[in-house]
Structure formats: structure tokens, C-alpha cells
Amino acid sequence: MNTIISPIIEVDELLKIHKLEDVIIIDACNGDETNYIKKHLKGALVVNLNTQLSSIKEDVSIGGRHPLPTINQFSETLNKLGIFKESHVIIYDDKNGSNSAARFWWMLKAVGHNKVQVVNGGFQEAERKGFPVNSDVVISKKTTEYKITSWIFPQADIQEVEKYSLNKNYKVIDVREKDRYNGVEELIDLIAGHIPGAINIPFSTNLNNNGLFKNPKELKEQYQAIFKNTKSENSIVHCGSGVTACHTLLALTYAGFNIPKLYVGSWSEWSRNKKSIKTNKTNS
Image 1 (tube, helix red, strand yellow):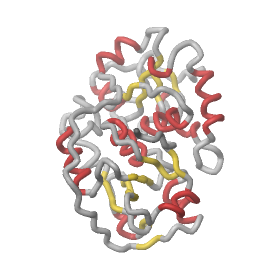
Image 2 (tube, rainbow, N blue to C red; image 1 turned 60 degrees about the vertical axis):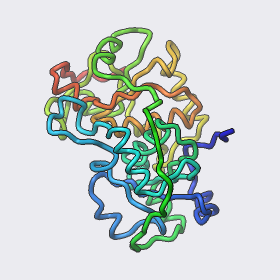
Image 3 (cartoon, one colour; image 1 turned 45 degrees about the horizontal axis):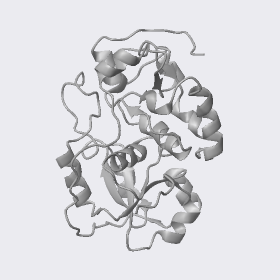
């Protein structure tokens, strides 16, 4: 029987267990491995958002900027990293878990992997607390093939988002920064604005002033107010390209909520299908 573990691990706990045989530490980089090459947590392998956690296509209007890889591609990535079903996978990035670390966490959970956690505060917090750091080349351990068959976590496609975005029994949550949601600026995608009916809860609200996740009680109180008229599982969470949205899914899981659906295509897909509005009204 699988033991449920917290999706967040504190650095102090990591320092106690990082040498255990089943622990695999992963540096999840946002496409550019330069920082990993310069320095990373001792023993950490690297996984790349652009080449391993996504299957980027030329036509961004179909699936957005970071569509998921196929199940077979993801299985190959897990095999290359030496991850097996009993591995205790601990992931960090240098953006408070808000980018590739949260995405990799969601992907592992979405194929049924049990023991996976994200380091609270990421690389900066681990280094600050004295976790060993170096630039050594790390070789993954050989393991048996990790066979996976499907994504078991809920996802929404563009048609479902359009169907439920104005349904009072559902919530579509946009976790991008307020100015991007309001259409004040858009430095990544082609059109500024947000999906009609979507509410804005920036992922940064999951963190305290020190860049660490708020504790589960605080997060639960924060999101209970948002879900007062609906259930968390009747919600769809998105961002720009289905990556940062996973930070909020991580926070909700940490707080004990049932996980909402992820809209992987997010604003990058929606906006390119011209299903968009531009607004400068502040969300209430």
C-alpha cells in the first residue's frame, strides 16, 4: 500500500535523506542547462523542460508552447534518468518550484508515481541552508524500463475550457501575473488578455515573502474562499503554456484539495485561436 507523502519537502529533511539508495534528485531546468552546468545540488541529474518535459511543435496554435510529450517519450525520459516505480524523486528549480519543477512533479503524479516531492524554496534555499553544491558530471543509474500507459491526472482541452469558462458551476483559473491577465503587457504570446470568464489568481500568491510555499493551513484558507461556490475538481487551471499552472496544482495538493484539471495549451494555444479578449479591468 502506497504511503501518501507531502508534495513539498523542506531542505532540512532533504539533508537527512539525500544519500538514501532510492532517492533521485532532479534539477529541472527551463530549457537552458547553463546554470546546472555551472553548479547544482550534489548528485542531481538534470531534466530539460523544452526537450524532455514537452514535445514542442512548430504550430503553437495546436497544444500551445509546451505540449506534453507522448507517454512513450516520457517513459524514455524516466528510463534515462534511472527512475523506477519505487524511486523517491526530489525535484528543484531556481524559480521557487514555479516552473519546470512543478511541471515534472505534475507529470510524475499524472502517470501514477507516488514518491515525488518538490524542494521548498528551490536551489537558492537549498544552497542557503548548506546543501552541498558542485559542478560534477552526474551519471544516472541503470534501471529496468519504466512502463507507463496513460496520463491519469485530469486535463482539459480548448473545447472544454470554452464550454465551462462561463459556467457558474466551474472555475477557470489563470495563474499568470496580473498585468498579463489584464492585457497591460504580453512579452511572450502574440495577444494580450485572458480567457473570457477566467479569474486571476497569480501563482505568486502561493508563496510567502521569503519565496517559500505558504503552509498548508494558509493555502487551504486562501483557496477555500475561492472554491466556496464550487469544488476544486470542477476547476480548470492554466497559465501561459501549461507549466506555471502546475505550481498552483502543487499548492492545491499541498493544501489537501482534490486536484483540478490542467489546461496544458493555456493562453498560448487559446490566444492563437483568436478566442480571446483584451481587458484592463482588475479582477475582483
